[in-house]
Amino acid sequence: MAGFQYTKVGGDSYTDNLIGTLLAILGNLLVSVAVCIQKYSHVTLAGTKDPRVFYRTKTWWCGLVLTALGEAANFVSYAFAPLSLISPLNAVSVIASSILGFVFLREKWKPKEFFKRYVLSFLGCILTIAGTYLFVTFGPNYHQKLNAKNIVTQVVGWPFLVYVLLEIITFCLLLYCYKQRNADYLVVILLLVALLGSVTVITVKAVAGMLVLSIQGTMQLHYPIFYVMFVCMVATVVFQATFLSQATHLYDSSMIACVNYIFSTSFAIVAGAIFYLEFFHMDILHICMYLLGCVLCFLGVFLITKNRKKLKAFEPYVTMDMSQGIPTIHDKEWRAVQPDYNGSFSYGALVNNDSVVPVSLPTPDQLAGTVSPADTLYGTADLKND
Image 1 (cartoon, rainbow, N blue to C red):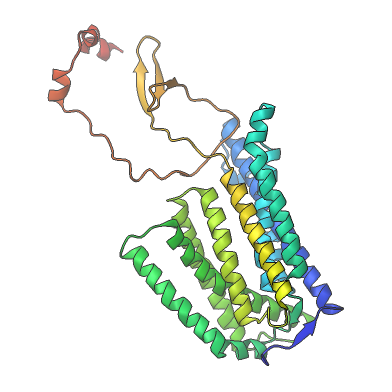
Image 2: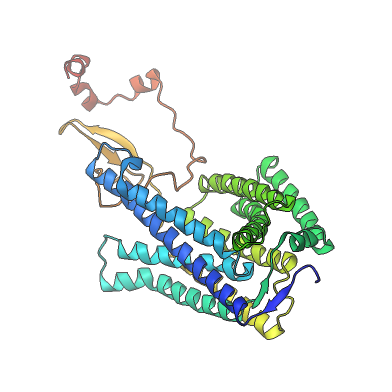
């Protein structure tokens, strides 16, 4: 408990919490807008058949700049507000993405279909906003002075060492199941991401706090703990991106967003409570109201992501309509459809088809035994002439 110097909310501490919260909200909003702009750039190129690559368009670069600004705002926010306030605010990005997707949706719906499709999203947004208000209002209200001496004291303290030991054991067991036992379940992969993420948020807050103190005049960059935290931050971020990339190849993106938000936020809250002692001076009522706000956010994010339109299973095969001379695409329900552009464009495989068994081509003997009289109308000479 003596590792950190706490200052109760009021004056500078209240201002710091407010600045951190606003920076986190702004950063998540900028990231959501940036993703929407970059998506619009890809859609525009696909729709107009523009020969340029995506990184040569102004809209894509605009999205990249907004992404950098948003992530920078998120990074700085950790230096001002507790982890328990910043981590759940990722729900703001989910809400913004849902609203932007609704605004830029080009499909038209009848009133009954519109209500049926979006009622869950509206309910999820309301629950998420209510939960955000609760955990921001009743969250930790104590400011930590993150200098190098205090951080070293907490790193060598027995609560954090026990926590890290349990995390390492759990991570190794999950990694063994994932790599050696082929347990590529979504829960296993995202638990690995969340365990790494709990270390990431600890190191991000430490690095951001020491950088802010250095800018304010109290130099912290000559302490070895700063570089230890920086290396751990970069390493955990890289491994998180690797596991998330593997998850996107196996599962639907909306399911990943929901489960990853719940797991990562939960582990980040636990990490903040253990390493930064963020709940040490809070009473039971404030803790219960804070947890209620987090549960409402979890439920809201679940409803928002659950309502996203899922791709229908499509097993295409192509035949040649000889009477009209055009290729025709059929699906598994024997309905013929033609390729069409409906104003939307998706890239990347969102549905895993690894379990589909490829169909083998018929042998020449099988072809010779199944030729119908109608097929003899088109001889070999005719095909060569074509």
